[in-house]
Length: 334
Image (tube, rainbow, N blue to C red; front, side):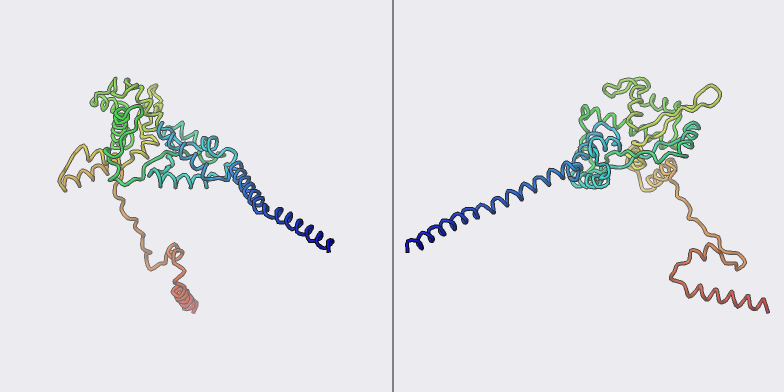
């Protein structure tokens, strides 16, 4: 009997030890699982798979560039956002666009390529097109808010360096872009000087830190609002004229020019407003194009182009035409 009791005590002790060992197993498993998840998260971040973080970086970069009126360049995105994970550009770009749309009411828009207007620029472009790829795109940030929310009372000018300074600068480049656009997109330098004289800006400007007109024009060129072109005429003198720059086309565009012209003329009657609208469209080169007319086949001849454009839904009609042609050919042979 004492031997049996000793065995029972030993078995009870073993069961207690096993229970004690078994109880902390779930905690150990939780720790291991949590540790593995932390490692996965850190690996995902180090491997560049966390698209949300890179999209937030791209949003910050876009807002910073727009504050300075600098274009967002592809190389800068690769250096400051993507790093060694350039293949995730499309995924990061889509997420950043969604964040800009949902949070800020903005979006990134691609800038148009600078026009090749001079003879030297066209020749250089033709040489580069032989073995070069497409030019690297760049973007700016624009608002997608409805027009009723773009009221100056709601959206104040940026404090760069002061709201009054930025508002004055915006008014000047909007007016200059409108003058160039309403002049057919090409404004000679002599006319530009006459316009600046009428504006009281022949030599000096009201813009802070850009009191000289020449200095302000250089800033407008740097920001991409206007472009100054010098083209040799072969007579020893250069032909100088002004064009609208890439940023000016996107930020102001035809809608901004039309709105400025209508605001200058004020409230007009229905007939006068229609006449003004027609003149603005003509000056901007947005005339109504007549619809393309297709020439009907003459002498009952069937047009080959017309037969190629037939839809697949008319096979029976084509077969009947082929049968008629075969019957006519048989009659001619007889």
